Length: 337
Image (cartoon, rainbow, N blue to C red; front, side, top):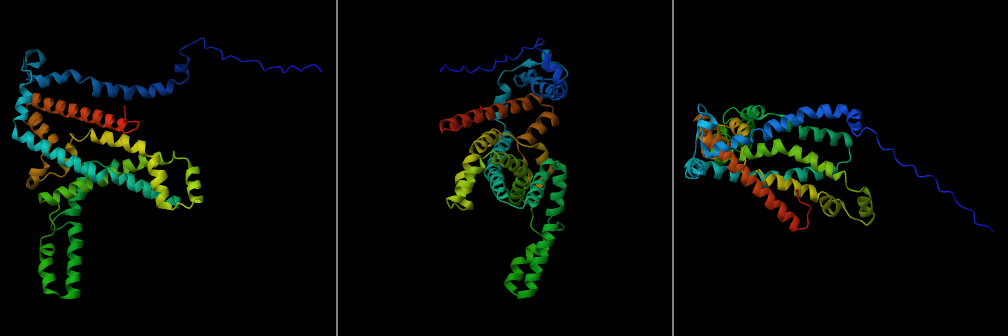
């Protein structure tokens, strides 16, 4: 018997477009929408780079770049000898590390908790409520904090005073009356005493920023293969074991990436946030690099000093990111770069 030849289907070659720029014509709306964001990035991120030379000059606005004297590293020497800079640098590093220590794990914990919710409507409402503070300006948050935490008339202190009075009336203990007398009469100085201010400042910062991280971790969790959870349930793994052995390893790369990015901001400080919680009684802690740059650069007209501090912050932040990325790769992670 003769072999029947199987006719192969003809290979259809994709026709090359005669117009190599045809994709621009096809997707022109997308490219038009990109014009403004790209222009903003160029203007605000790169166009200002020539201005960094002010850090090496005794810059005078009236003389401009050409008329101002070149001083080299003298501006940096002057900054590093400044006691105000040392205080601002210390406060910035301490508070940013505390922000990282307290604030970084919170979105991970919240994302794990929300992922375990089975009632979808409640889950969506919770996500929305957690995410909303991210869109509030620090001016609004500062006003709300002032209303909530005033020593005498704040809602929190009023509630605490009412609770203490109720306890005193119920138990009639003289020792309890003496111990609670300060809370009832004066209130807790959440915003007026530096240690209380530090705790309030950190907690409100964590509350404002944790929704953003939570959404990112939830998005990463959706990329985990659902069959892994089904197999774990068949093997008898409870909820905690599934989170520990499936969910956390599944979002490990996202955790590493966000950790590297957060480490790069250890030298930064948020002027808007600091201004919202400004109080002359807590200057020891409130005076950070953003306040220093604002006071020296804009307040006193020392633009060279302000530029030098900004350049110093950027370089240290870049070094921290590169070091963190290197360590992550040495530990077997993908890293950021």
